[in-house]
Image (cartoon, rainbow, N blue to C red; front, side):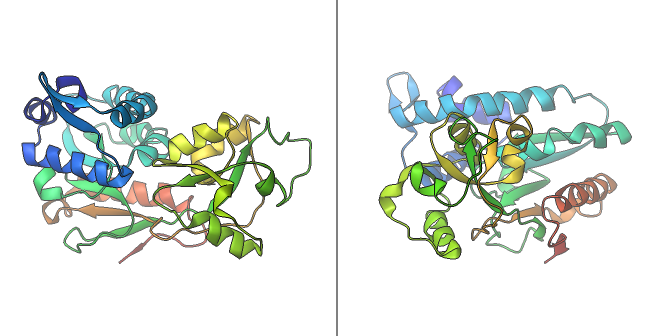
Length: 289
């Protein structure tokens, strides 16, 4: 929205957020990816080269989310405003939320994708789905799930009719995650294998772009099953081994405002979400912290 309007003020008005909230989201995103995304030009804010590259990669994901959630909107219903991570919103919520709304036509769930920390009071969300344990306990964080990660590779590089073993990890470049820089060395140690930093061909800031890199044959990535499930079912991607990896700070949490926790719409959405997420974390059911 900021990139389109070239103005934080205009973007804040369209998103019904404060200017400070929008500015903080930009700073959080820049901190998350480790580069500046905007610069100020003669016509307002402009995307940097890194910002243009990131926007090109994530725009298809955000467009899909906007289309899904926009199609569900209808006036005159009780509303709940939820923030969610892009990959979680696209791969977990959007395929299933229509079932919840069909069973509860009196409700309207508005979603906005965010990256980084979420301040419920400043950004006027009722609740948020966040990655990593929240620093503050004010949002009454509840653990949703802790997905296991597995190594995946394109079927073009390792055809499904051929056996694979750990040697595949040495035959192709490893795709890293900026959020989990120690994932590959820790996973190699877990497997009893020798790791070298030059085995990593590049790092991604989002799970969805890592999955796309795998699909395009760039190399091998450690990913949760829900991100690549459809590609595995289509025979486009395959898992190299069944040894799971649990990155630090990989759990998803639900945080909420105190004022919303007794509302029926929130209680029913929370119950539905907990059940949905339990399938991603069969070894450890969701629990209250």
